[in-house]
Length: 203
Image 1 (cartoon, rainbow, N blue to C red):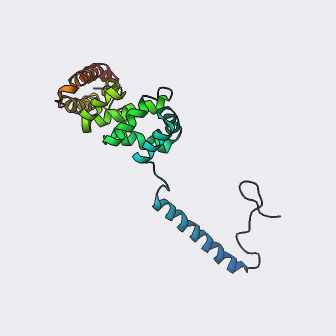
Image 2 (cartoon, rainbow, N blue to C red):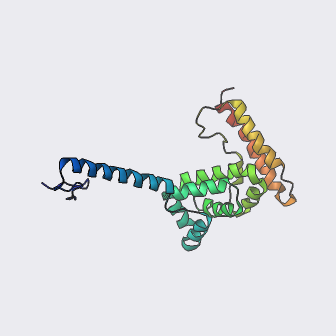
Image 3 (cartoon, rainbow, N blue to C red):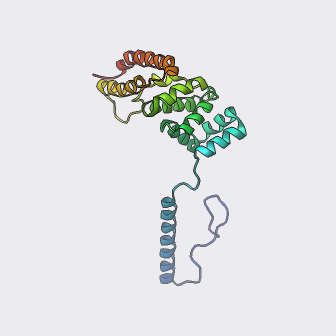
């Protein structure tokens, strides 16, 4: 009977039938060693393709924000790249995030990750996030996003307050007159959430 592959189709023999038992053992060892080396090389090389900011821009330009949001939402690699890009506060990624978040109402997880990304970006470049409120970024939601959501271990109330303190300092530091209203709205949302959110954590 011919050996079969894991898909149920006939497969090729790994060890030639004509080899002696000792030679067959040596041959099999070489095959295992070669396979292990190949796996190690693939892991060392990392992902074969990346999804950078230029890829995201191209996707939006070709499909439009709504269809691009649908595709990003359904592809974990794209989604993680966009979310972490927005969180980095790089201007190019903030622009990408601003275009996607307004079209992501039908994709709750994508929208949540984008809002979370903008909340992290506030501490790196609060002015850049606030000014994108005019482009559809839900600034109040980003300002009041729980900074400790998804923490590996249960944080304390003092850790919650310290995390919000850092965000608040960054927003207070925005002195641009044209962003005054956005800054005040952000601070109001943040301070309201501080009162509500603190109840979730133990002292």
